[in-house]
Amino acid sequence: MKKQTIWILTVLMAFTFIGLLFIQIFYMKNIVEIRYEQFTQGVRQSLLAVGQQLEQDETRHFLEDEVSRVESQSIYAQRLGNALPRQEGVKLSFTTSTGLEADLTIKGDMSEINKIQTGGSLVGQHFQTMQDVYRSHYLYQKGVLDDVILNIISSASERPITERADSALVRKYLRQQLDTLGIDVPFEFAVVNRAGLVQYSSAGYQPGADVDEVFTQTLFPRDRSQRLFFLKVYFPTKRDYIFSSISFMVPAFAFTLILLIIFVYTIIVAFRQKKLTEMKNDFINNMTHEFKTPISSISLAAQMLNDPAVRKSPTMLQQIAQVVNDETKRLRFQVEKVLQMSMFDRQKATLKIEEIDANLVVYNIVNTFKLKVEKYGGHITADLDAMNALVEVDEMHFTNVIFNLLDNAVKYRSEERPLHLAVASRDLPGERLEITIADNGIGIRRDDLKKIFDKFYRVSTGNRHDVKGFGLGLAYVHKMVTELGGTISVESELNVGTKFIIILPLSKN
View 1 (cartoon, helix red, strand yellow):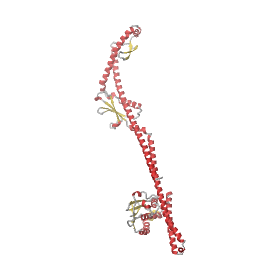
View 2 (cartoon, helix red, strand yellow):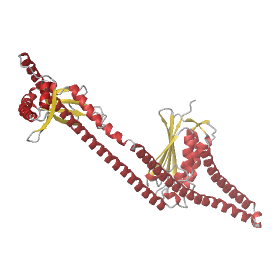
View 3 (cartoon, rainbow, N blue to C red):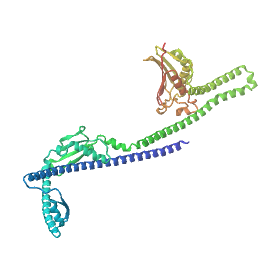
View 4 (cartoon, rainbow, N blue to C red):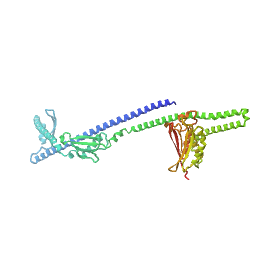
């Protein structure tokens, strides 16, 4: 798949996921807002109903007081000799001239009532007389009711608020009204006066609660403004109650995020595979070039051996044999490097661990490598200052590590200045040895520093034909240092130079 196609698919999928997430978030936000409005409306409706119930209770209280007063006066009148009619009687219904309907009960001696009912033409006269009597009684009772209303208006607000709105009764009414509307949420409440002073409150009421979370209802709004009281209610778990309505959206949102993560991971893997494919193609190209040179040399040597004149010259035969031997070794070394990396990927490397003096091994390597450095007009120095350089490593692989780093320094030398290599060792705290290999070559870009230890990876300047390799050298170095229990890091600045730092644990003996 082309890189451009991958980018197009990435952009399309990204827009799709962003749109899907946006719709889900927008939908969740709308649900929360609607739920909040429903909750607010339900609470206000409940508070209004509680206020009305308290007003009805107060009216009932005054009416019961008035009825008790009238009954007591009637009993008092009986004791004074004003006998009341017997309770037996006849119930009559009538309509006044103003259109009011009323039910009247005629109480008294049943014989007299029967005379009224059966008295022929006298019935109408008696009934008219009774209408006049009870109309006057109706007007009297209406006046009494007006007196009761005036009494409520004038004296109700003088009663203590704890009597007018008992705390247990307020809690009961609130719970009933909220349950009726399906709001099963714990609440705290308080009754405050006009100045905001709490008259009484529930046990968990907190005066410092957020104002936005407190609902207020005026109690007995027809009282004088100086005597007004307010019922304040808030719900500690309101947020949880509202967000519980969108709990069903959480799994959908979580699945969308999982899909997004999988998509991002898939895209990353696709780009890595694309880059790996490119790196393998470069590897094949470089490997072809690396193998072509020794094969061509061996082929040329074979052709020379077919010449009778060459076969007659022992010196020429010796030179040809040396060329074949060197090129065969070179070819075998490249094949072995590829096979070693393949083996390391499949299983842990088999190492022959032994205790060696790293200073001595590095010194010998530097002496061997000096001729190659001087061939390019450079020089190499070794400052092996470590007092304790005994390490437990595989000597062959350790030697290959140092050779690979020195060989890279020669390959990536700068053409603008003479090559200079510096190898050093020093002691580190914690029973560790540090070995550094620094050069003044072309350096490595910062973007490439994170990838130079990847298999098949080569920096852009390393793809030239004059710098040969498979991109396996540093991958091999990193792998071996790690297998030996150490670490390797790199410091580099473009057009200044590069320094590799190897840290190995010292021998426990």
